[in-house]
Each structure stands twice: as C-alpha cells, then as structure tokens.
Length: 199
Image 1 (cartoon, helix red, strand yellow):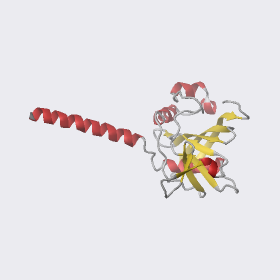
Image 2 (image 1 turned 120 degrees about the horizontal axis):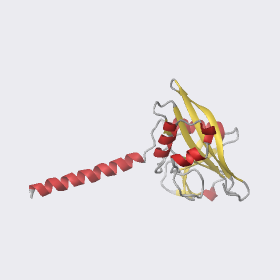
Image 3 (image 1 turned 90 degrees about the vertical axis):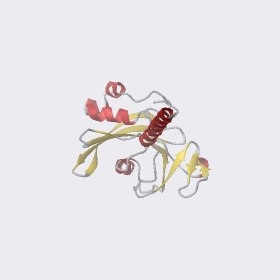
Image 4 (image 1 turned 135 degrees about the horizontal axis):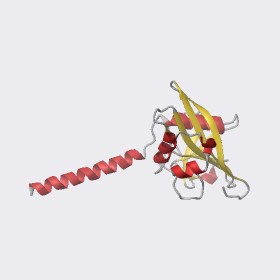
C-alpha cells in the first residue's frame, strides 16, 4: 500500500510540474515589453493617436487567416531581410511562437491602450467587456512572441495591423542591442491587404 501511495504521489507531482511548465510557457517575459513599446512607437503612433487596441493573445503564425505554424524552413524560404537573420535568432523565434502567450498590462508607450479578445474590448479595472463597435477604434495590433539570439544581442518580433475594413499589413521588426539599449535595426513588410485582397 505504501508503494502505491508513493507511486501516486510521484504521478501527481509530475502532473503538477507539467501544468506549471505549460503555464510558465504562456507567460510573456517582462523584458519583451520594451521591444513591443518601441515597435508601437516607431511604426504606429502619431500625434493624433488617442487609443491603441492590442490583441490580448499573441499570434503563432505570420499570415492572417492561416493556421500553419511558423517553421524555420518557412522563414528561410521567404528570405526575410535578404536572408541576413542569424540562424539562432530564427530558431528561437520559431520556438517561442509554438504557442500563443497572454499579454499583460506592462506597456509603457505613453498612450492609453486596451486589450481586445474576439469582438470585445476589455476595460482595465473591470471584468465586464464592451463590444468593439461601441468604441471609435480605427485599428487593432497583434504581436508574436519575441525571439532572441543566444547572446541576447538581437531580437525579432512580428506585428500586424488590422483595420475595420479588413485592410492591413504585417511586419517583422529586427532589433539590435548595444549595451543595455535596444534599437530597431530593420523592418520588413511581409504582407499587405488592400480592398479585400488576401496576403
């Protein structure tokens, strides 16, 4: 009987550890928000921006309406940034985006923002959500998770901008780090949708 109890305890421990690992895998590291902030500030903010709407969950693909996962082969085949992305950066980016993560209220780009899930936009201090249509939202942003080189001196993130008329664009943003400061090294538009076209 004691042996059975020990075995059951071991199995329970393994289940708990697995659940914790899965939970941890969905957490976005705090340091990634610095890169998200820079992306928003550089690509999307204007002097007229009053509200930024961000998808609560990250995306695990590079093209809207498609379900195939990001792979190392697909990144290399499309020859992004003229094939200059380091292999360890591509590998980590692909690995990081095997599953979606949940974004938290850690953005600091200086403009009000709200998270959106499906067709409901969230309020920061209340659990109730209001329909997106009730707010004058021009567009919404969706991010991937961040990939980094082994030396943590380069990073890669995908962001897409979708408008209510179903037009939009997707971008890969390549960062370099000097000392403690991250800067955008290059940006590539990887798809656009104009007037009902698909990427």
